[in-house]
Length: 341
Image 1 (tube, one colour):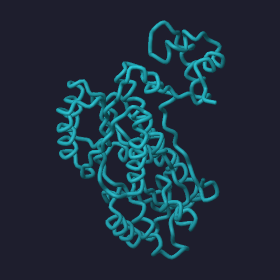
Image 2 (image 1 turned 180 degrees about the horizontal axis):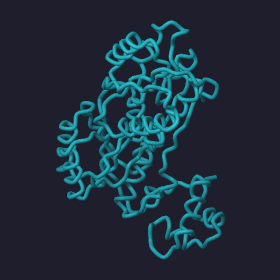
Image 3 (image 1 turned 45 degrees about the vertical axis):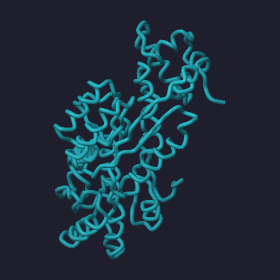
Image 4 (image 1 turned 180 degrees about the vertical axis):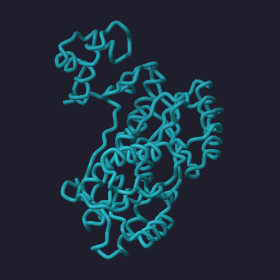
């Protein structure tokens, strides 16, 4: 059975009125009590269904997801999750459409967001790219009364309402600790391959990674980041060139989504010369590479949770409800060869 507000009140040792105040962001709750209620929400797995609460109103929510149109496996997974949400539209009282834009193109993204404004949807979710024009477009959406959620990659400093994604600094720090330990005390170089430093998630992962490398693994020489726009062919070319140029590369961190190309390059390397590899997102490509010992660890974020969270937050913002932090926190999972689901 799904947990209810009664279960939350019982677990937290508070009244139903207190639970209602926390769920709806109303004042009159002490900080320590609010934390106890949020902990109960998290541990019980409670999910507030704004759509169900508004069935009697006959309310239908209109949302737009703006997604990059490249074909890496993770973004395909995000699109699949949005399509799954579209298939549930009748039951969830939503009308959702997808707008595709070129990847890593701030001008194209801003143009797409600006074109949405006259349609007056209830909310927009998009994968952010840094750029003054994107900040301005978000401000335009908000001025029009449209709720805004960034998805996967954030746009801090903008007027967006919420970010549905993992803590990317923490992800980068985790990757550094894994690589540092897996290299077993050896000295050598570490290569880093990214999609683009124009997106916040890649930049934050790199910052977290470099911080831990400097703090704990100074024996390892981190090479300048290589950008390959998450393009499989370009990633394969860049990784192959780096491995040829630096035969003492003992570790490789793939912080973007160009894993298909990276795996292709690694298959061309003699087994004894292969570096320790940490990558992101558990996809068909990374599953196979884990099984083949081409990748040592994968950090994963749940695309389904991110899309559901974005929709939940957009509905909440339309209704004037606060975000339940414990419910919307996106977890970082670590997968090795032995614990793949």
